Image (cartoon, rainbow, N blue to C red; front, side, top):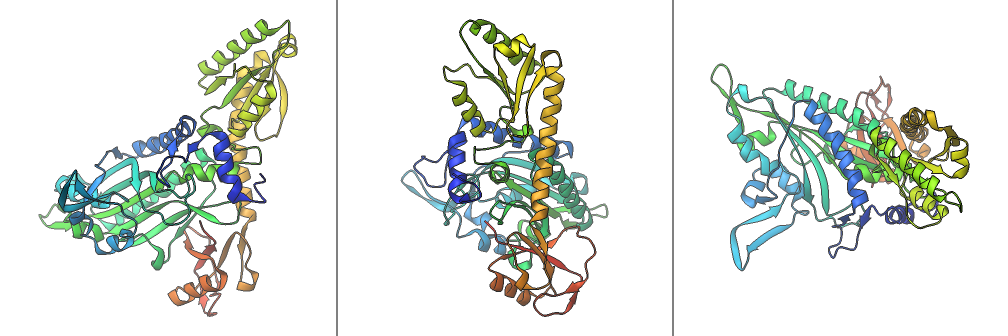
Length: 465
């Protein structure tokens, strides 16, 4: 299956070949995490935990069920989610007095408790996060990791004593996603969503979007400034130094398993998945090349190399299956292992190993006594080059246009006067979605692409998943 010719068919096929997910669970859109896929997701989660632990967030785990009474307290929020939620109406045969729902996100689960946790300015800032499953009744065609009904989800929630401190938190989140993107080798853009597309209940939303090979964008996550919209509804107040009770200012930051889907889509090729080394469940696979008269020596050498790789902190695997080497090569290429080491009798005689990069950039014989330093350098090099390649492809498919007649596939940047009517007209004429104003964009001066009025506001427009 050719990725560039039929991405929609290619994507599920490479996931199945790599054994990352099993869709045969008897509820559509609720897939099984296989061991290999779950290892990749845990590595992704590990980097998230590292970043949020390092920025003084505490990990929590709130219950799955939310009472309908709490869910309904923020009017805009319920309007945004009411068509997506799963309801629990009975406990056994007893009908519940108050219906419960499976969390679609956790604002309405956490915030009644935040009202108990926050009492004074000394309790602020409150910064927590959790990595849990959320449930949304997705009505469109489901697709592993990208569009599912049970979602592996990260969310951080913070409370602050001022709008300014909440804004500092949002800037910290922007810096965190920049660091995370390098670990995942995922180029992205940040766009402040237009009013009609912000998160339900937010004052504003920043979307984190990556460009897929089809020219469409995939939202990897989002950052939200709530101001006091939720704290007023849930009575989350603090007593300031003068004794006055004030509502807290809040932010959230959410990402999901779409991160893994994006990695597969951006970096995979016609052979299968291609993992960046940092999140590869196996970074280096050792494959014996057995022949009569040298089997024992080759097996022993492979064992030694495997243990050296493990001792050096690399995620390594020794493939001792009774299969032909070509079958093994095919399998590990499909699974996206960044580096393959082949060892046969000729390598032993040469006191070397043969090293093959998954991305096809090289196949080299490396001297055995230099192997470990070379492999470590190679893993770092692959990580860097995958990020550079992704950024280059995204840059080549981002276009500044001054007329809708110039519309192309990819991300389009254009002038916008800020009027909602002009924004909707852009969407109607192009069949694309307004992603919003790019965060931290360079100085811009132009005209609204619809009405022609002067503007200093550029927007990004793209077809989306």
